[in-house]
Length: 244
Image (cartoon, rainbow, N blue to C red; front, side):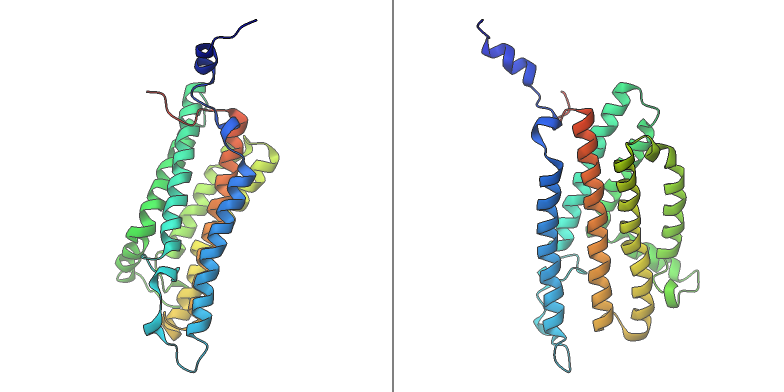
C-alpha cells in the first residue's frame, strides 16, 4: 500500500510535545548550565574574599549572581519565561478541554511572566524600598518585601491544593517540592540574608554566600517546576506551537 507524503505531513504537523521533548534531558541540561554559572560566581566570591581585604574592584560582574547584569540573572529570565510559555500551552490545552483548572493555569502563566520581568527589573526591590518607610524593617524583616510575599505565597499555595491534587502523585509531590525549594530561597534565605546585611553589609562574605544559596534554590525550584510541566505536556500531548 502506498502512502502519500502529504498525508504523512498533514497528520504529523504540528509536532506534539511527546515526540519532541524529553523532560529528563532538558532538566539535566538546564541543571548543568545553571550549576556552571552558579559555581563560577561562587568561585569568584571565594577568590575575591580569600585575602584580608576583598578585592572587589576586580569583580567580573557577569559572574555575580546578585547582579542584574550577570549571566545567571539572564538565565533566570529565560528559565522563568520558558516556564510561562509552557504554562500558556497547558492553559490553552486546559481551556480547549473545558478543564475546571484552566484559570489556575492562566494565573500561573501571568505569575511566571511577572517573575521573568522581575529578574531584570528588580520589582521586588522597589516594593521593599516602598515598604521600608511604612513598617519596621530590622533583622529578618530587613528586606521588607520578603515576609509579606512569603505569607501571600503560602496562601496561594493552599488555594492551589485542588489543582495540585489533580496531578499524578509523583508530579503532585514534585510540584509542592518545587514551590518549597523556590520559596525557601526567595523568601527564607532572603530574610536570613537581610539580617546579615543589616549588620555586616551586602558586601560581606557571609551575605555573598547566602546570596549564592538563595539564587541557587530559586533556580532549582523553577527547574523542578519546568520538569513537571514538561512531563504534564508530554502526558497530555498539547501542541508545542499555537495554531494560527
